[in-house]
Image (cartoon, rainbow over all chains, first blue to last red; front, side):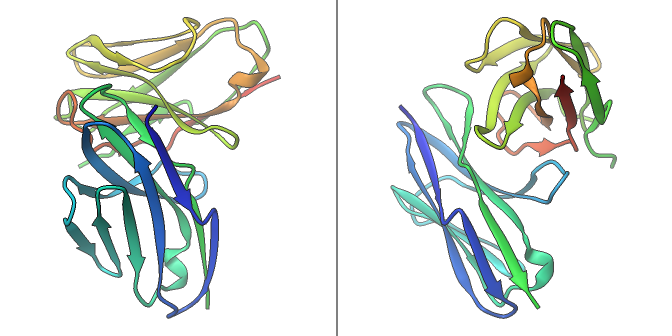
Length: 110
Length: 113
């Protein structure tokens, strides 16, 4: 069965302290891997789509990378406004639905 | 461009009742997907609608149903509510069927008492 696992569950950083979030997946026929950011009380906000191993995408302080087994969301010099839950999700050619991980709750302290 | 809108934002219902939630997608988006989000299970896919037809369905009981109108607006219905149906129900729109670059609405917070 397709699975998406995110680690760590929670991460506390000091402002400026770079780190990475992990998303491990076992999906047959990966169609795409997606990263979203979710703030409390709001719907997820689309960040990136990655389609193939070796692909990288960047947006401001965020950079997403993809291998055949996992994806990383690198956060460089984070700011308090980067505090949110980051979700990754996969889509498969075999079953058409999106499978979400449980998320990593990121807190950046000033 | 206006984002995805969902109504109502908050709802309190009693066990056994039914509820209808509404979603208006981004203008030009023709696919609408529904998700249930709970602290224990996270985000789970309910169903996807495109061109007024259900294209894909998640693993939820038949009490959960939906429909899409010709203007791409969508509704989902939950009948015979159970306490475990308390959740944030999210709607997401995308340009076409199977387009996974989805844009989410703010959600409807349903509480079943």
